[in-house]
Amino acid sequence: MHFFDVTDIMFYVERHTTVTGIQRVSFEVIKRMIERHGLQAVRLSYWDRRRREYLSMEADFVADMIEFDPDVWSSVFYGRGARPRVGTAPTLERYRNHPLKYHFHYLRRSYHALRGNEAHFTKQGSSIAEWNSFRAGALPEPSSKFSDLERKPVLDIAEHGDHLLVLGATWSINGLGECFQGLKDQRGLEISQLIHDLIPIITPEHIASDFSEDFYDWLKASSGYCARYFANSKNTARDLSAFMDEIGVVRPIKTVPLAQDFQVANGEAIARSAGLQAGSSTYRARIDRNLGLRRDILNLSKMPFVLVVGTMESRKNIWRLAQAWQRLSREGNLDLPKLVFAGKPGWYNEDFNQLIKATGNLGGWIQLANHPTDAELAYLYETCLFTATVSLYEGWGLPIGESLSFGKTAVVADNSSMPEVGGDMVEYCDARSIDSIYAACRKLIAEPDHRTALEARIASTRLRSWDDVTSDFVDLLVT
Image (cartoon, rainbow, N blue to C red; front, side, top):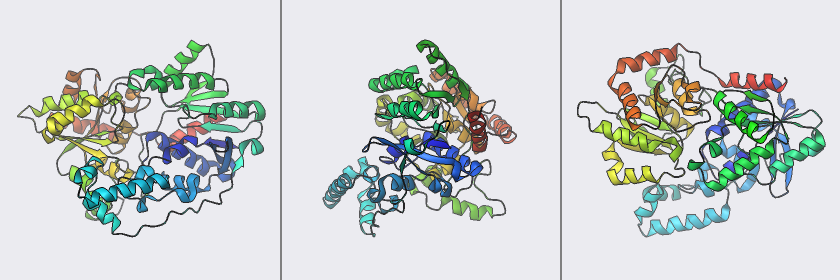
């Protein structure tokens, strides 16, 4: 039996309605493991905070999902308290699993709408018109078809030699490490942990100090119950090996590079085909791809743009990228595209925020796409000129691979794991040099033939798929 820990997913959907790379990794591997071995060989498991118990459940609902759906996961874990996104008021998504908070902020928004306080809604990325439009519609009642899903303690059903694979970030979850240690000692579970990165201890200046300390303690303690580790890149494997040497522990470390694929809501992988399905009219496909997208997302593609995907935090180095763009905007003979940041606000980003405010989004050269859905993100990938990932450090670099899957090259920092993802299909730069970032971006903008040559190289390259990732996990778990 293979147990897949989904505790981090349970905690994530409690507060969020979009998906990050870590949740996508877990979902894709679990789903493909089910497809390969069947539901009888795969179960999900999670740490129940209230009961202080590690529970297991069947994975049927994962097999039925086309993409990672936060609403489904929320219903599984929170039942009738989980309000579906379709019935959630604008700006209140974060409270949809907390009825009392949701009701309080709903009344608060209604009060400001009644007073005509547009500024209140602008700060939330919304408007009074959007709020009133929502209130004029029907509010569906929260419900869950998963309320009767059977949950069993893992201790009651696990057998010696069963595998527990932890794919997500569990290092800040109180009590879970001790639980894993008990499962190993009492039931002989073979526990494997996927390490996405060692960023909290490699670049602690970009992380809250208590998080870095917690991560260090967790990683050290995990060596007591982990039979092996997986790393999502050769660079992460090197970092983990160096850490294990420092604490004097020897554990097998297997590298499983992540995919360069991208999945969207219609269940079709968009890779190089730009979402145009075989046999369909190009015009019809263009109409279909725009359905359901927010107007502000569609507006971004009216002018040529370069796309930056990810949480807007200091480690992503977006202040230096913005400085390079400001320099580019001063060149009168350059046909400069806009720079679009697609993601959510993150840590320690005051320098970027101050620059944006002081310059009026660099005079309009920079635009933001807050919390895009997968379908909206796919649209932005499809319609951009190229992408940029100039992070100071990455564990893998999903946006680089996703860009390649759309046939788009990128400006990529030449550090950590990112060259493993970009290969010879992107333009590299030194993340710590504004001059280098500027030169790389300018080359892809001013030399379209060079950009086309890189795109041709992408088109002739077999990119790594989630099936490849799953195959590696399956093979390595039995060795």
